[in-house]
Length: 492
Image (cartoon, rainbow, N blue to C red; front, side, top):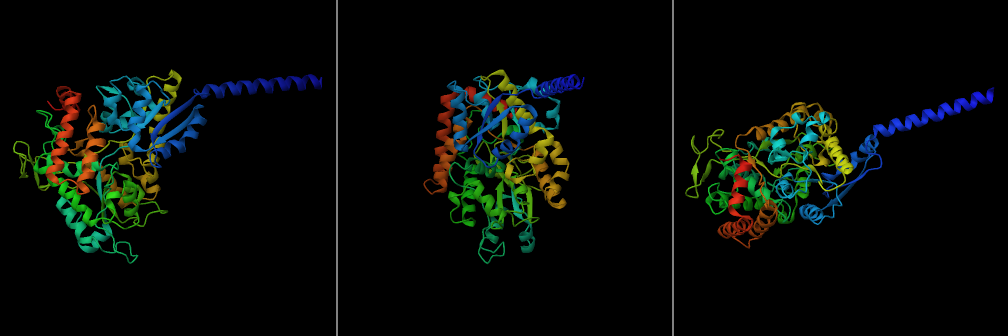
């Protein structure tokens, strides 16, 4: 009798184990699925994917492999993989502006229906600007994990000590940088720098120059644009506004590190957080990097502002600068035209349309998991992630920011600067037309590097850029490019 009972008990245990295993398998919809995600080498951007990948595996069963390449190679690597039919990557974390090259070719999986059915993603919590930026012709193609636009950061303690105001215009920026250049800003007995802005080739110079030029060129609202004349697709380089921006960008070099032409954004961030720079321009990363006790010497010593503006703007008819007034600068604040630039727009996850259905589902689920508030609202408060706010809940709830080391005052200053940019009716949209990679990351980057190196003057740089961009436009089809450009701006 005891033996029979023992056998019966064993059978029950086995059955319960089988049932438990089946239940666990049912709760892990991607058991046995392996996905490859391609992105930037980092450590920013890739770090959260690598850190949270094992958690996603535990929840769903899917194994996540994060493959990284230098940012300068990411576009071509993704394009080649899909265009050749290799399809070794199931998903991509890349620039949403590239959608206009990849989606029409059928390379990316449309995600609209998945997003609509995905309550956990809380899509309505994502700021409309970032919703739109990840869509193309009414279809969602990528999930934002990051929100990007430029801001200016300043040493609040040093400016207060010197009786200086945060810069409202780019002329103010130059004056503050010149005044503070050569002073000891971190108390180590060595001379420091008035300004630190990355200028190395292939290190986003094409975005920095646009942020400086933007308030001189765009004054009539977002639909006006800064890259091309919406009448004939002529590039907006050969004018007094862009040439003035070139002069300002080059002058900042006088107040920066001696090797600034070789410094990337990682270098300038390190210089600023170590207390060696009075001013810098960057995405939202500085706000969180500045509170890291392991690397920052400027905790609670950093102010954030919308990028400086101008009291003069371009007369598009004459190509000359004219003074701001109610007509020329309808959105000016205290006579200053601001035009914050949504450079890059933020890192976003897209799914390869050509891979197995199960891999598509797993890749989408992973990007959704990364973007959901439970994960995303913590990741944007950590400097090493490279992720910046893009959800309303990230902007309006300061508790996570304070929890991760930002003082109440600093968190308010930082988040209000972001809101000022997002709320601006004169916000500048990044270029989102076919060949935008060739326009910006190839030709604009190349010519700006030549200009900064002294190989070209302002007139030569403006003309060289005009010729290069016209060539790209004509090869792609001027009428088609103009229609695409106007559509991205919402221009009539």
